[in-house]
Length: 495
Image (cartoon, one colour):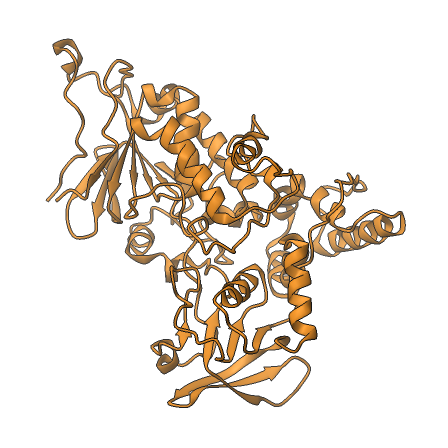
């Protein structure tokens, strides 16, 4: 059964002409990217000329997994850089100061507070003119120059243009975790979900697989719940995130690097610049921050072999230096380590089995040829999102791959796309009327999951979604109708 998304009746008979209709854009996903795109479209006046539908099963738009978090989880970007709007960089800071006058630009506020901000701004500026379809899209196929979006459980809607903004996928299970352990309640596959850690007793021993920002979030959550037993973080390198610099920003100019420089050259440049900065009393963080504007260009200039070398050998160290944690969180972790309540180990899991007495994990520690067995009460997977959408993207992406509408990059970091975000299909062609927004564009940009990166993507896409662009792509049958009334804000799944 196919149903078109409901639209209000025209205000007058003259608007009912079959040659006049507003193009419909459907955004699949309801997290930050969807809310940001919708709000930017509203600010540009484009919601007066197009119908926008957001398809997402959550009743709340804008929070996603990232900003519907435990109260102790903190942003890892300071408040002064978290505005939704590229042309108004202090927007979030002003909003936060209305609620917390003491907020400084360098403060790392709670994720939940940021979720309140996104939800409120979207709700005020865009939601009254956006249709929210509370459903999950399971399939997408072309028809008559547009798209038919099949919904889970039945029903469908049509759209002229579709934006894939599905957010982060769940993490992959760590290697060598047995099927029996995966189904055991003492194994937490996705710690971001609601009260996933509530079943852990205060004296239960815990192994966290991963040592990055997610692992620190897990540690903070456990301690907030009154957990007192030992927690072990296990990762390939055993490296915690580095600290954010607590002082004022220290701009650093990177040396000139020839276009198309290889990975070895860039590594030498970054190391040399970091040592020079420290020697001159500047923080090493300033060098990493100086790379932000050019990271995508560097990544695009690397050959396929260099990209793979980076992913295998450099990425753990890059992540630790680039995706940093608030200094007070790291000081707290250091206190726990000194007290013997936290252990950070480098190694990999050789096997894991469960019995009534716990989960028995054989760990091969880095630099050792033998495995040792650890018995723990719980294992928590904190390895971060699995970027392989063929494995984790669910029915929607499985069908998109089969139909050839999208293609995965060779390193399985996300989807192939042009610089504009236009999706590239399985035969190397641009798929008309299909765009990618958010983390799935990591294959082209590498740095692609922080708000400053995502809002820039959304702003560029919003500029592309003007009626002139739509008319060129979709044909003369799509004619602007700015006097048609707005769509309803929300209705349950059709069908």
